[in-house]
Length: 128
Image 1 (spheres, one colour):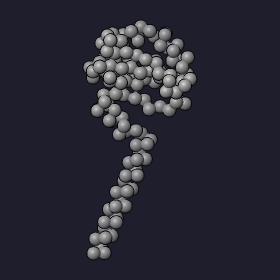
Image 2 (cartoon, rainbow, N blue to C red):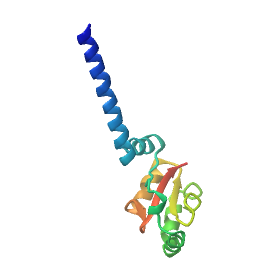
Image 3 (cartoon, rainbow, N blue to C red):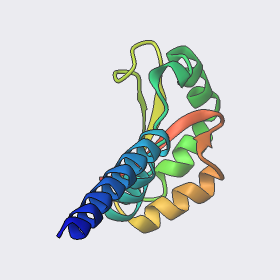
Image 4 (tube, rainbow, N blue to C red):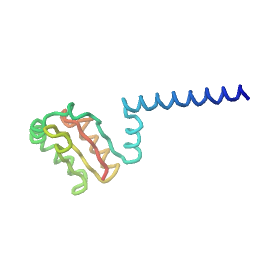
């Protein structure tokens, strides 16, 4: 009986350590959240803190400078794809939210962007 109790205690401690390790890894990498966003919501987020975002004026200037690319993105599916600058989440800072209606739209948008940002501006892709 005592040996069984020790095994159970050991397994519980091992389970606790594994859970704490998973929580620590998730806090740093957001791997579970990224997988959930990608496969369940068909979204992509940068997960940057406010202090890492560029200034609102800088984002606005980049969007104006590349207005042709913004129009190209919006033409992927007119009325169902859009590009918005989000400056309300982090006052004085901004990023871009590109929203779309389908996974196919997302693939086309990612092809236009050619990376994780819009000319250096952190970008979030949201399936709405």
